[in-house]
Length: 264
Image (cartoon, rainbow, N blue to C red; front, top):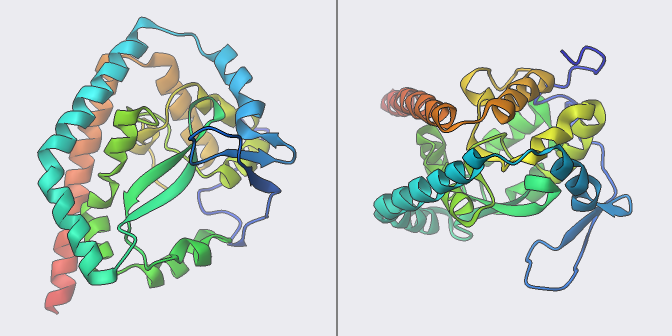
């Protein structure tokens, strides 16, 4: 599939990423993100019409949105004490900010601010922004805080994205959100990549339950498009269940490994 496009790995272009002409323009209103313009045209303008034309609305979309609201709202309510403890711990151990805020490409090309608990030293993204691949991984490792290692191992750093789901930026299940610059690069390398925009990006996705991080982007895209084409409540619940089981296994293994390393 997609044999005519070069394989682009999640971590290709080791070293510095190719800079793109992306600027931010305030366009009025209360939108904190504003309009990001790529070579004279915003992402929303370039992809909104195309992705809307490609989307065939289904009754199940309302059902899935209802499931998003119900699950994210309930989980946020249940884990709110834990969120407060994590937030206070970050503030005490490494200061402000408590949350990481990063721009991501959402449904129909609109940009939104994605939230995570901060696991890196303050302003780490400014230092890491120009890098990809092995160089990024190496430099990121040096930026992780002590508490951040625990949060990453348990994947508790992802919990604030439930707020993104509740407000409609994301879904529990869908293609993982991506930075605007990298979206541009992937759209050029994989012409079909824009088709991910017809649904909300997800906290987890079909691709994340089937392939590894090192899998080529074209193969990940194939799984994402399969979910978009076959989306249903049963498939949604299967992906959520598979993700919960995977996260539980990985979190226990990672935390156990951290405990073991500290004990030596």
